[in-house]
Length: 299
Image (cartoon, rainbow, N blue to C red):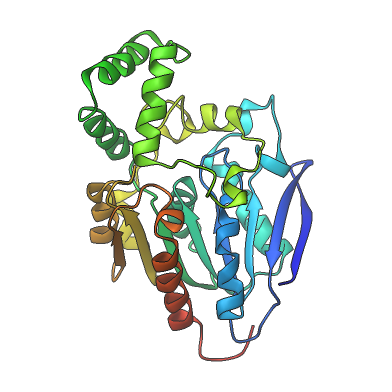
């Protein structure tokens, strides 16, 4: 399978991108937006098979602030506008006039804001994988799930939130357990792209979101789009897991708000549904993309 890597100039820095597969007139490319903010494209490499199975390009990139697009020491950059402008610039740079777009976690949030604020042309379909439309609902649901943990872990997390001491060992252990329960974990059988060392954008995460998943003190803390989801008019597929940080309540708020959307709740999956339920996820995604490719061959 052909793989092309490159960089796009952006804000005086550079944005890394990775293209798998060959362009096709009939099969629209799939652009992947990773989570965080501050994570990397790495985990999306498990979706390389989509390029081979459907005959389309699958494109991922490291958002500015992380991975091969690492930037540090610029807290003023870590805003929705920065990452949205980067997405717009990348579409133009790679001539992605018509495409499918998939965002996981924060990437799903970015898709929601992009579709509502910019009303872009050429979006054949949008796939929101474990994203959300409300930071306040997200934080509330995380705290509800924390309330199901052992009292020792609950107290460690409460203490860190009250004192701001997010480096306390008891808190770090409790947070690790929470993330293993609801986000992801790896072992010797995990795909290499999940265990490969990566340059996480800690500053981008802290200033963009916050110190953890349940304290959104960053610039995205006021991300609230539930009341505007009706402005999304392209076909929209939602993925979430039964054990996900994106709880059924969070996913339902998007499903009920986005007209005509489809929701796939994946039993037993955590925040990375495309890893925990890989075969089922890819099968559903590949079928969805085929169904929503345009019938004409103009690109």
